[in-house]
Length: 103
Length: 170
Image (cartoon, rainbow over all chains, first blue to last red; front, side):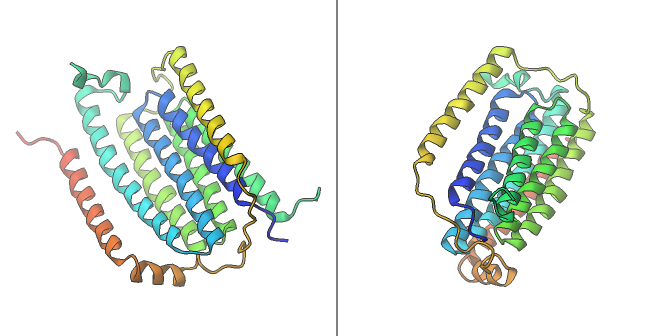
């Protein structure tokens, strides 16, 4: 009685989580929430990789998930350092104020 | 129980909670609340990993994400003193546009994935590919070179973060 879940349910769940993250990136102005939405999207992909690794009985996808976690950690560390530098200069992390590159 | 197995109940409850907490991450006003809801989302995803019998990955997920990355987020929020609700909001029109774009993407993806074949996860619950013994063998035999590259990546991220974050010395 443990075979009650199909891969489609995980596909749907990952799709919904990914789109929530995408909406968060589009709809918010706070840069920290943008980062969190990106983390959410990465985790949706991770979940899908793990479910397909179970489907195919192959460990490689779970190793890829480790690499994705390491890349996400590096990305967050550098991103938050950039963010704190921006905050020091602009006194805000509002994305709409960071338009210096436009002029 | 209503014709569903205990695994299906667990999957449903975990999925519902994950989606709810993810929505709360995006739509809560206070960044601190967003971080805490994101931690809860990560715990739900770790529960999914446990359900998929990827125990080591579940533990690593909690340790790395809930333990390290989220603490980093909390530090930065506390450092910038952002724990208030007075964040400027996007205009209503751009929020509506974001919602419409997300909804359209959802419709397209669900429509594309709905017709796929329903394959049950036959290895469910009794496979040992997620155990640390098996994962370590794969990681250090087939993926040794990417592993070393990742260590260099983490080192360079460390150096870069310190270089960017330090105060400029005049």
